[in-house]
Amino acid sequence: MRHLMNITDFSVEEINELIEVSKDIINNGSKYSEKCKGKQLATLFFEPSTRTRLSFESAMLSLGGSVLGFSSASSSSTAKGESVGDTIQTVSCYADIIAMRHPKEGAPEVAAQTTLVPIINAGDGGHNHPTQTLTDLLTISQEKGTLDNLTIGLCGDLKFGRTVHSLITAMSRYKNVKFILISPVELQLPDYIIKDVLEKNNIEYKVTQSMEEYMDELDILYMTRVQKERFFNEADYIRLKDYYILDCNKLGKAKKDLCIMHPLPRVNEIAKEVDSDPRAAYFRQVKYGKYIRMALILKLLEIK
Ligand code: NCD
Image (cartoon, rainbow, N blue to C red; front, side):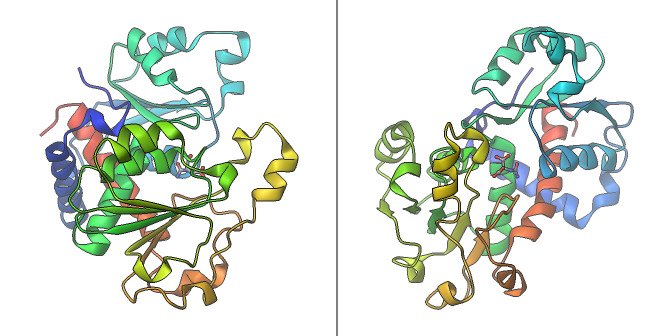
């Protein structure tokens, strides 16, 4: 039985295979409409979510399966003091596969110790978010036609942004990828990712506080929200929350085929006026999230 805890749980070949299956789903959706007949997906969200939970549910429903679950810890027995291990062991008696999101880093690994069915990490604290990364990889592959030879700017909260951590880890396995890390000093990428991912693999990267400094070099601009819920101090959040706001003016020097991404939700970091720029890919990205999760469910349930 396989789980998805970290994006590196899958080889590059397996990820490429998931991308290919997603593309087939996009083109031949009806072929997949009964693949998960009789199967149940549980979505256990101990933390808020719109896209991740609903895309998982929509994915399973489009595969002919059904869904159960909860969307907040307060409506589950967690509120009575039940441990993650016991909750997961219980739900794995009902469901065939579980997608879970939890505020504590490492909670999915704890879940993996008691589960009877595959577990998918749908975000653990400020750590990882591998299914957002699968979404991002499909988006990049569709929008740019390749995952190699790209300069990727990541902008905003690189410290607490789990989608950034998983995306850098994933993209570091493709050829000739460079990163521009754009953040305030307080929200820089954690040292463990710089050392264990970027430096260990000899990946070229630049650190800047300026959104515009390298704008003309970027193939991808990945914007992120400042992660309010991970701050210890509200004053720090208020000071940093609007540090970067992308607008049409700031895109002045950008490439004509730049791809602007955002895992969403957006707060203020992208002005509404950017939405009508054809380079704004973030709502297309939302759609890709459903297709790749369909491919992922099939893979973990070993359905051909
Ligand atoms: C992200 C998350 O939960 O980490 N959202 C998502 O799943 N699409 C990003 C965020 O909340 O800022």
